[in-house]
Image (cartoon, rainbow, N blue to C red; front, side):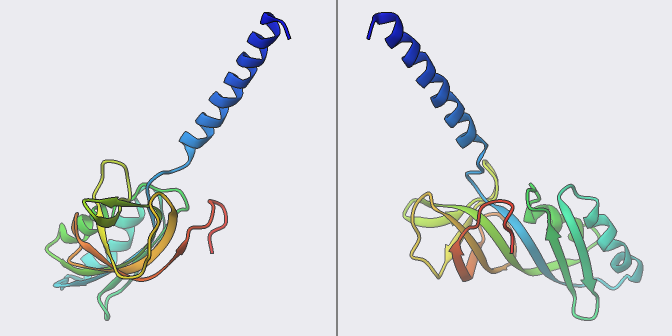
Length: 173
């Protein structure tokens, strides 16, 4: 093989490598919420309860919202690819004086280890949630995690009720 042939092969391989790296960069490395169910208290205003689903539905990535006023529960189903943060929904509810007590969530993404603790981060640079229970986890492996967060805020503990390998995008249960 001559020098020009070797250079041509190297350039071809470089193109394949660049394409592969670009494809890997498109894969989400962190997590996103699939569903969020918030339990709240202190909402006495009927019009506030009635307007809540519309306020949440305006958020990009929200597919469906329902509120059960008697049980004080707001259920939010999110699009398969979304960047909705738990804090966004919590803040939208609390803007009229309502207190969010807890959240049940389903989130999928890469589990990371930070300072010896297992975390899941819905978005790069965003809030992290400490994973409590379930496991054992494997660094950089994608999981689908369901659990409960008491007093939803950045850094809160996500008490895991179930976890399993995450399905590829487009194969949502």
